[in-house]
Image (cartoon, rainbow, N blue to C red; front, side):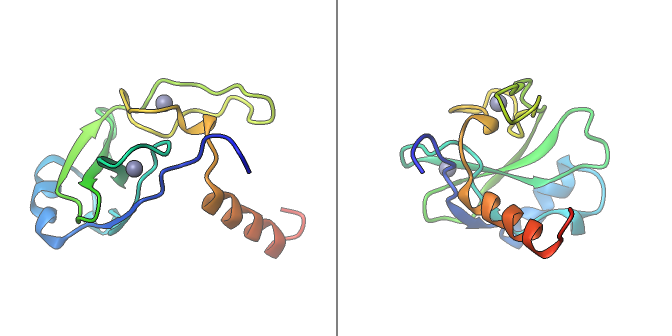
Length: 129
Ligand SMILES: [Zn+2]
Ligand SMILES: [Zn+2]
């Protein structure tokens, strides 16, 4: 498949970051993820981002983790959702799943082969779904 793709770089959330997460987040820290995968459009080496914690009170946004190639996550921040809306043919009015001001294209404008494969697997296991 050609065209823009997701970055997909992997990283871990070190337990040393949990104090910072508790300090700015709310809800059950058990709901936070520990394995990260960059959700941006493929980009040159540098900073990667993934949604690390969907907060109980998301009025100000969700919590994102940031890391550099080859390192664990080293900071978290809260940002509102990207206001981007898709509306591409076949995607309905899918909203961008990234944060406000993210680099690169909005999430509905590039492919995520891993997520597509997982969804295809679900469809195969659940006929009629
Ligand atoms: Zn990345
Ligand atoms: Zn966007």
